[in-house]
Image (tube, rainbow, N blue to C red; front, side, top):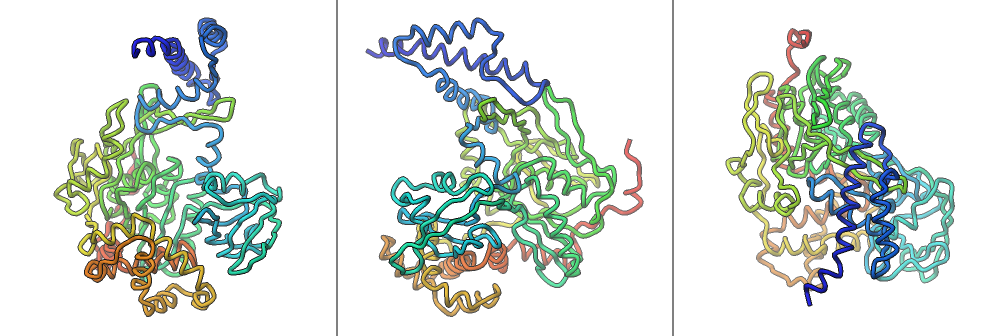
Length: 549
């Protein structure tokens, strides 16, 4: 029976194999002739004949286009973990975060109990101008129901985004009103910010948090630096924790702002990609300021380029935990139908010559995908001695030893604090109950919470409410058994998590960052370093003026 079944699908498997082979050949044939690719090479009569045979004579009807769509991700997954195929329908979502803006209504939302809840309204955006407020529930879109099990984040974005200046009618339930309010929103450009927080940690230390490296990241950074300059900052902290990367060019532009002329920032090289170097031009305005860069296991790609450039040139101090370890360069290549591939064409190397790409086995991504879990179980998040370097040692400009082959290892290690983590805290976090409670509490108390205009004032108010007890009661009603001893042990962690989400819901992401940074160990280590004047300063002027051969 199995043999007959295998024979039945053999022509289909042959078709997939041939189509995939032609796709690879077509890519290399077009590699240096632009970024537009054709799914079927019109010059290949053999392929055309095969597809015609399958289409005309195969025992069952075969959708050849669907065959290609299914084959593309599979073949790319055989190459490396970061070569990917993106279908035409997923292209907009894939590009929005890095493009700097998209066209939509301008809300942040969450879907709860099959209903879209407006979490925040973008200031001066289309939704705010139309009259929507945080806490509204969108239940109708263009007079059609917008609730139920089929409502997903993808469906919501598909319905709410759209071409600029187009209109969408939203039916909204507000507070405890029983009638639907209707709003007509004219879609407009919605900025997607890379810089999510800019403020002073103390009277001398500026702080900038980067979410990713997009098209507008560098100008956003310059604006943030100008703001900090007005506040008189003398030291700078750039937070790249959780930053999964983006455009290499943005990382190079930012590194250039802090490095003296002629310093190597990064270079790329591949089988068909000759070595390309990126060096600083000496025009950066902040070459002398003491600098700290924060990283963790979520910092990847362009984040590692920036951290590696600062570390290898001894320009700043890297604090945190070992970064993700993505050292592969992808080139976007578009197809005529609007889909695209991001194909790995080179590796990038930090100034010392190290590639920080962690090991992987072609065609088997399981160990690669579970690497962070393996690090956690091995104890790397808690002890610097547990870090396993898979690459050789390299030297920075002044001879310090650094390692490649698996991310950027920080100069100062900061362990993840799990002292007060209990199984109750883990369940509360992983179940999503804390997020649900914080949203419900915010929604039910917006009028009172809105009286507090600063993070400090709102924090002070929340600290008096015993939100942990309120959460424990809520969680028990929603299936999480109360564990009083564990709650007591994890009380501080629970309070910080709960209150931080309420701050986020009522204010902004920057307010949330300020709140969680208050007792953050990496921030405390940073401030200690600056106080003791131990952060790497800029390279001495005499070295800066040396010519690079």
